Length: 117
Image 1: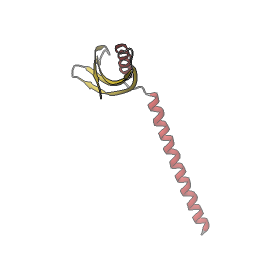
Image 2: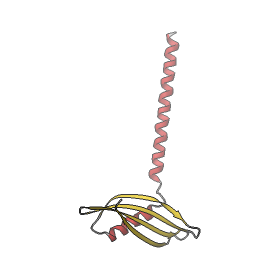
Image 3: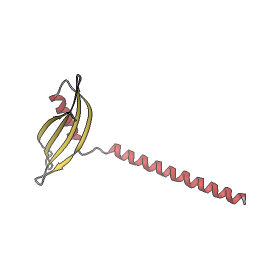
């Protein structure tokens, strides 16, 4: 009888270890895919940071957020970003809208709006 209980216990442990290994392996694959993939907005995010640094040369960018993307029926898109800046003792946000043509990837317009939130 002890052999049956021991066999069942070993089987349960093996199943649990196997499931844990599969779960960790799946998590690692997801992480690798995420690290390899570059978000579609990355190019525009780099431009947002570059242009913000140009507009506010004494400020440091201390936070970055991609707010989202809006599209229009005429094949234009607006990528929206929020950068948080620190200039001496002042901290403030800047909302950056980058409008571009989705077919040609050509930049159309960049706007900046300061915010205290």
